[in-house]
Image (cartoon, rainbow, N blue to C red; front, side, top):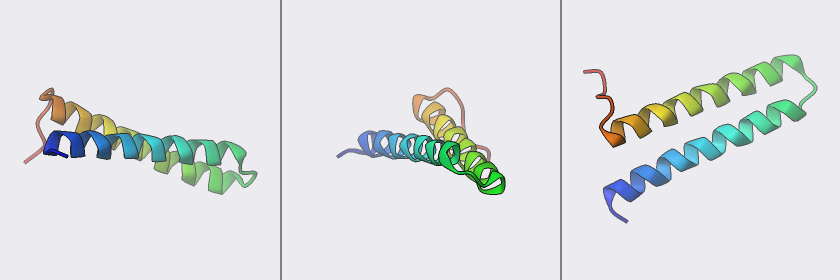
Length: 63
């Protein structure tokens, strides 16, 4: 797999994990755990979007 394919796979893995965390949060009855899982899912989704934009050349990483 080339670097582009590895990057795409990593981004997809982050999105899948974020979706999994969100689904787990929706099923949990503990409000604190639900909040923690939702925040973790949100961070992962945001990170995957950032990496996707950098990969596409839309933005550049902070130096």
